[in-house]
Image (spheres, rainbow, N blue to C red):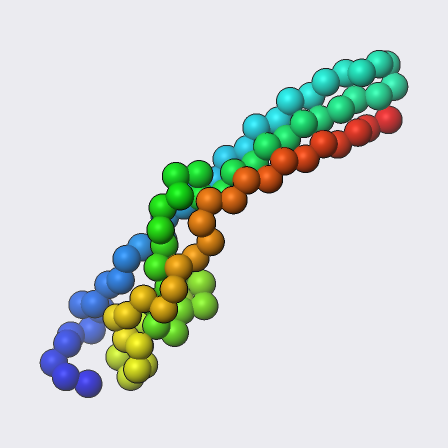
Length: 87
């Protein structure tokens, strides 16, 4: 496997910030409405998948043919909105 020492190759880390905002509205004594906005990877930071990776903590083994190469990226920014009616 060459002369690369143990734990000397480190790939790029996984970095994402998720946030959400909720607004509760009282429509009457019986009905309440909740608006929610959720954002995943709010800063849209590119997270690369290393060879053999199946998640942020995937394996990057020396005997893998794609060792040290990015095999793609994880999900970009994702926005999600929702309404919830309680009665």
